[in-house]
Length: 237
Length: 237
DNA sequence: CCGTTTTCTTGATCTGAATCAAGTCATCAG
DNA sequence: CTGATGACTTGATTCAGATCAAGAAAACGG
Image (cartoon, rainbow over all chains, first blue to last red; front, side, top):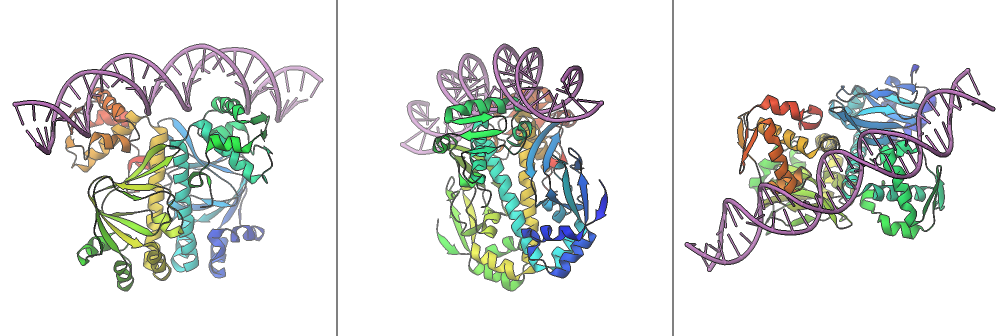
């Protein structure tokens, strides 16, 4: 968990992010000079809800779970994949985090001091514009997640998740789950037990599962059940 | 439902919105000149999810329900009160609406063409900054709503709602519900039947209800049950 | 390689909330 | 005043999903 200034080798990955692509060179260097990179083991809590937002976080590799707790209960809110930022809204508003974050696996995280982000935001038009787009994107993602959760059963969520993954894997009828089932269950807002049962139930729609391997016999058949909807399932719009 | 250019008498209300307070006079006038104001009867669908976002909407009076549908099901996502905007994210991204909107009561709505909003955003620094703050605020509101929904039972949501309302009413131990129970039920994500049962269940914590009148015998007692949390219930942070 | 630990599966049961069905109450037009 | 409409309440039933319990399979450390 060594704490270092950011190595220059990480600059390009970050520069390519939509959020930073339009920032003036000078301002970009300001941000990078103040930044740190840390490597974290799995299951490390990076931030705790209620804390003040000192850093904008960027996942460079690995993955991060955003979750919330109340009264002894816990729920997963979102998963963050490389390369993208999280807790931008808290950074901008200089307000306490609403969610906690923990690494799901070994992860490389960049930390940019929030005050630097706010300072560059004030002087760099391109950065300001990118932040707006990013925030709008984040907002719409949460809305989609909420629709998924409130309008669909867990079986329907799983079916749509599989169709989405299948789309990513060059439309092959066969693909591997990207992570262990207990984490998939958490992401889909269900228990491992029910995920297991849900996989079994999807056999009626031609979904075969062997370990982490998924085979979809008839995609159209599964689609008839899952009824995918771009206003919920398309992450790009 | 007459469609008019915006009367100048509405300018001050809009100007006072955080979103417009820092806009240069000239740009503000540009926005106002292109804007319309319409009066709508109750239960009119203002926008439909999936449509392209032609206007930024502002509720001047009345109230608006944002809801979503999928596969014949419908769920209420948020309620918008005067004076505030809605569907800002879609306007900024020039992307389709993710939610539909309908008036809950007789409402007065201002409509600013989305392209004007985007144009002024590009040239006015103050407006850009305000949009960022507003988007961050919207984002955080949704996160809080999602936490409320995922971490609490309907009884707990109602208890916290009552405590919040009680706080608004000068801390009097007695106050009126601001709207009919069926709409309250929808806002809290429950059915009218269960709201009725929930009110009954809260009697154990000293909540008395008579028509629209709520009396809380011992606020501390109710708080012990409701466990209000600023990271969920405080709309200002 | 084996034993331990964790994940995954399966079944039984429990719970929060929705739905269905009736009935009560309030409001309001005629 | 009266009948009708819609809101609210109450009880019975159903359902999705969580929880509890226990066994099977896979991963891992020595």
